[in-house]
Length: 404
Image (cartoon, rainbow, N blue to C red):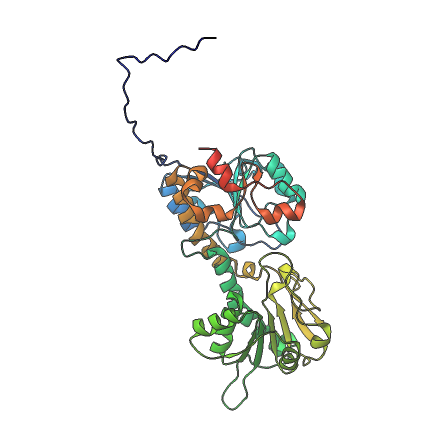
């Protein structure tokens, strides 16, 4: 077969094409729903009336379920005055394309979820169930978790705020249960002139440990901090700006210190999975009668062998004559402060989402936001959840690139 030569037309010209750049989408006004939480002991609300006022003033539409702010002592009137619409039907709130929750989606929420919805909430890996994720995948939901969302400094702002609240609250709780009125030992946390200070042992030198240490020192207590991560202990010393007693986790040293302390705080945690158990039942049995254990790590299983889950209604139990306080989600007991802390992070984030033209547009530009996304249009983008439940994992970066 004869091949024909390509003919070149005289009118044919080579011209450089203009480069096509990624143009920022125009802003989008958002429709946000805030449901009343039904999850166990959840008193917080993710957006305060002040934050809602800012969102509404920027042209966004906010719908709030009746009594959603009750746990944080915010009334429907507070939200109505901020410009939100108050509704009495849960199903109506769940029709909003963006849901902002202070608790993860639970069993009761699943029937209300809409196709292609966006949910901004915590994830609480320890309480997560496989069928929750499967249901959300089937509804092609995009979900952003509080715990994994990063800010520009590379830290997790909401986790940090909740840890600061918890660390500060720990010493207030300890002081309460050491008093004679609560059948405690009858000692003042800290101490006064002429009386040796109360001894506090803190296991874990993270943010909770740091703020518990700050508050214990401020009250005048003697504090000893244990952690297996030496750099965390150094960081703690630097942040406090003073030398305190620290040690790596060596069982005999820990047992010796626990024997003579009045307050023991468990604040060790793993990035994912169960908290390590570092205090045995034998060590607890050797502690002084009337002393108190506060196991902050209880929402990840606890780091004291004797710990058992308790509630805000019945916060303590006594074992080996030692008071155990094992309430998960301590920050929810200080709901208004916690709500303000969450709201301070979410309100600017939601405003930015609106300016960028929606979550999908913002994900393209904002790498910190990508850290928080565990579902993107029904695709599971969190490797840990996919391994835990044996579900298909999709790389978020590839997903985003394929949509361009």
